Image (cartoon, rainbow, N blue to C red; front, side, top):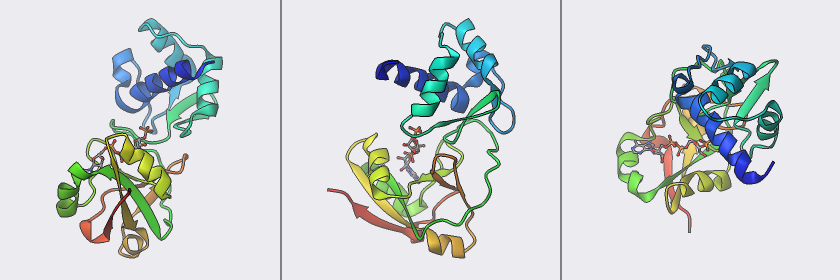
Length: 182
Ligand code: HQG
């Protein structure tokens, strides 16, 4: 399977497992899971064909391990805009976490802190490199350091997704350090 095809299948999965399952007549359960057979059938019925082998390949080789398979079912490990409960246990974060964004967002972030915007949670990375890549999706990246230890001490709840993304409801500005890359 070539890389372009894998990216195409992965983007299709993200769209329908995180954002718009109803577009192809799918219903996810409350945990975000769907039967793989039902997904393949629904996709095919809506004009996008892929095989179970291609799906397995994408899940296994995806750069960010965005999808998880359990038994006959699949879900996105994080990043949903639709209402799902991933059922992740609360976890103790490392002392610092990182958030990649761009300069144009800083004024709002300085006043309101980090907000989940369209997603369920604010997404934080365990290292600067990952956060830099996340920020670079939108322009020249700016990496903010989050004092996760202090947040945790103050009662903020953290979860870590199956693919290592740290999730929390919001990050008030007092826990943020503004630090620019490059
Ligand atoms: C910004 C991708 C104004 C925030 C990535 C970001 C990640 C604010 C944007 C995952 C704000 C939201 C998530 C505020 C936050 N005012 N802007 N108060 N608070 N923002 O895409 O973190 O490829 O929802 O800085 O790699 O960029 O999809 O979040 O720029 O892991 O698997 O609002 O998505 O992963 O954007 O990215 P997003 P994100 P996938």
